[in-house]
Amino acid sequence: MTMGTVYALLGAALAVILSGMGSAYGVGIAGQAASGVVSEDPSKFAKVLIMQLLPGTQGIYGLLVGFIALSKIGVLNGEPAQLSTSTGLLFLAACLPIAIVGLVSGRNQGKTSVSAIGIVAKKPDQFGKAMLFPAMVETYAILALLVSILAVQGVPV
Image (cartoon, rainbow, N blue to C red; front, side, top):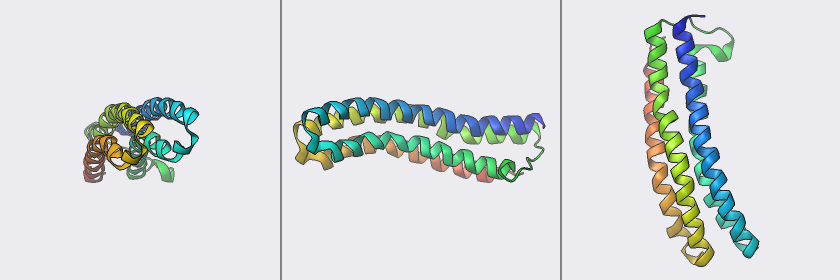
């Protein structure tokens, strides 16, 4: 296995690991807030569950980029390409947007979801408005996802 292939695999791993860490943190803290609300009023379960799930998308985005990169490298069919160092570094760089933005936005979306869950706890009729706040954070994860997908697809193998 060449160093280029190692760099490419590192990029795919970072996309999955860092965005997954962001989502795990975000879903975790939102789940803590949601649990408190449900313990007081179980009828709000569905609304707060949706808020808790929102930060989980970053991990899915990182997983998607990781799969695309692994597929393009040839790992998924059992025959990894022997990549030059520069090509491997291109894969690494292509995976970094979703890795880094996924980590940061997953954490921040979780914090925003906690606040939105607080709105739903006090005013359940404001669910639609409350959901907009964490959804705005999602915008940046989607942009990073698009950049990473386009960049990975653009790396010549």
